[in-house]
Length: 311
Image (cartoon, rainbow, N blue to C red; front, side):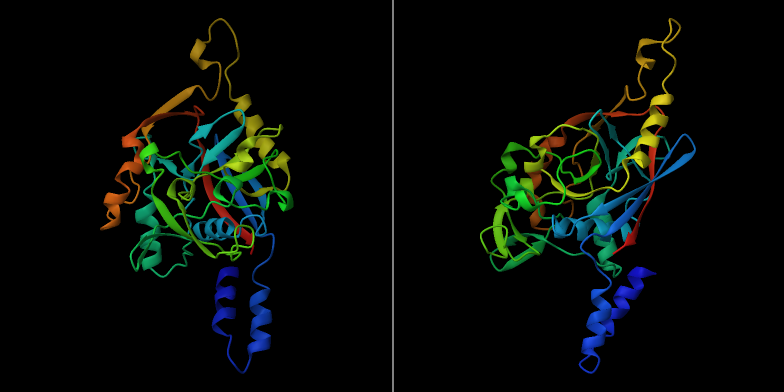
């Protein structure tokens, strides 16, 4: 309903009612939007509230909200569970209970064709032609963003982070055109720049950071939010820990951890399929279908929904 009101406010902006309509529209967005992610584990739901930061990562926040509003994340799962992070947003369990990569590019293009909003920030430029790539501009230091000292969020316990998988070394020379919401104020002052695809290739993957020590990951990934109350997430983590079998002589060695079940899957097999002339440019991006192994709980953690509660 809130999204519909925001759209109404934008449509209602006319020359006659400019002042009032603009005020109404301004109320639809805030510096710190909020989302609630509902996780499901062993039949129990865990609602975790996150506060996002437009000042830290405006493109990333907008991208995440649009995916959430479209229901993109609903029914996906935590596909990698480590001592320092919960990774989600890109995989689901199919009817055969197999971990499966979600076809991000096909889904978001269909959403756009159906009229759902999708803000583009990364393009492949060939002469006078700019082709949208449906990824999001990487708002972090290693990608040229210089606002580290003024960030609201960094990698601390409960940080919400946009993730992208490493690309093949042969893709490092592939540049894309990025559009910055900040007009380049935190960079070199240029709103559009040509920079490597490898660091501007994030799609839907995200993780919640569980570590407590400082890390250089701040330079490599965009932190765009944080849990409002980490205890909400801790309840889920405790439930996963409690699901561990008792450590006794009758327990098999591979039953000692809830995350020792591993899943091997080919990485980035769906990157830019059917993008016409652009496809051949990105053939080398996928690491040749490199197989990676993820740690998953024996009982899956399902991302039941991601709902925007404050825009």
